[in-house]
Length: 551
Image (cartoon, rainbow, N blue to C red; front, side, top):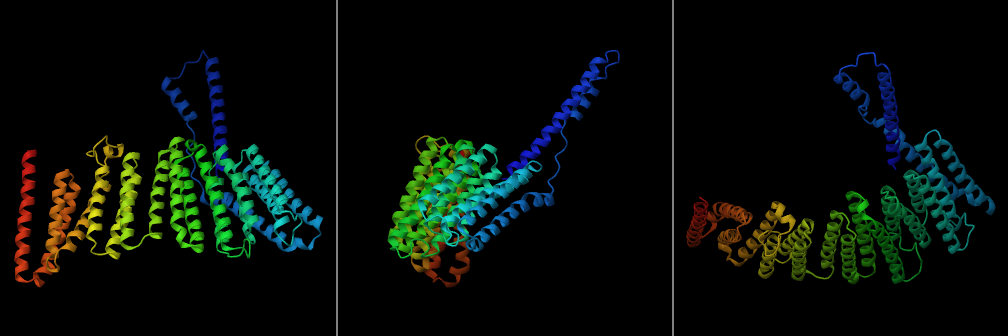
């Protein structure tokens, strides 16, 4: 809705530029007719032309004026429409049937006409008021069936037809006026006035009609603010409904209510996904990401809540289906040549949804194994799609599995070994040394991700070797783990594993000096120090040979 304010500023700048060009043309005409006079030096003419053509420095936006003109007008029309909506709800029932209809539409028509009159003098302000008149007409039509105190129309089908016609009228008027302000005010207020009273199936159907109107502007005009606010509004309406147990179909079986709720959520998800993927190349990256993320959050949270309230055993199926839907959206985004961030976002949401499904089906060791497989598969998929974002998601899933393994299933050697291997494979999959053509992201280098993988591999190996060692030789196990990381780092020629080994070796030395010297028996001290010395010498010798080879 701020686009029209910027448009007015642009028009003012164009007018100033036109006047400047006119003055320049007049000056050139005078110069041409005065041939007897000496021509000024070219540098003087160039300097004058530069001063004349150069636009004035843009004035800094006055915060006070912006608040007063932009925000107060919008807050004012919102408060006014809500107040009139409450007036219709609580007082129009005292009028006769014909008077209710006439009074409601006279109010909306009067407000719209007043807005058009204001628009002749102050275009943006007048359009805000005109949009409020359209929103009020929508609420009057909505109230004539839904509000018991004002009800005139008994047929729900007829009421929906009238609402659909009114939504079409709002869309046509805003489209012909090319006014995002009119569309935004009318649809935003229409969506939120429906939440002023009890939410039923009729409310959700009318909300869907308004959302469809908003999505028309996304597909046809590529407006973002109106559809994005509609997305938030429709899911917000559903939140209010979900928190009220008997607001829809009171007395109906819980299964029917669940199917009705999921049906609406699926409808919202499909509507916004189709609108986003219709012409994604004409939207900004931020807009694409906002639509994809908010649409996923709305369906994942509300759908998961509804399914869990009915039967937690179906949560796994719900999240798997949602993950497949996100994967399908990623495929469509690639086919439609959508911006790269949108494609990678869909891939990341697919992996995250699969990860969310695992705790609903598995526990303890099986949960760690499931997350390990999910993280490994995600990291390998990132190689084929050249998606650094997806690779990061895979690493985070592996870290989640590692933390769960330490908290819930300590001492699971097989799981820790699998996690160690998974971290190494994911890191190698993003490396140019992996068999096959390297991805573009590997050519650019992703040092931070490699460091994270090396840290995860080090922690996994630390837990594995430390858990296998006797209680008195834990420090020695840490040294062995560090030695193993050094060997891996030299073998794959990756310094991040060697840095992780140095960090682990430092921890082992600190533990040796602080804990083991005071508590270990003599034989264990001897064994620990001798093996530590041998391993340190071997590592140092390896570094020396590498340095000599480079020399």
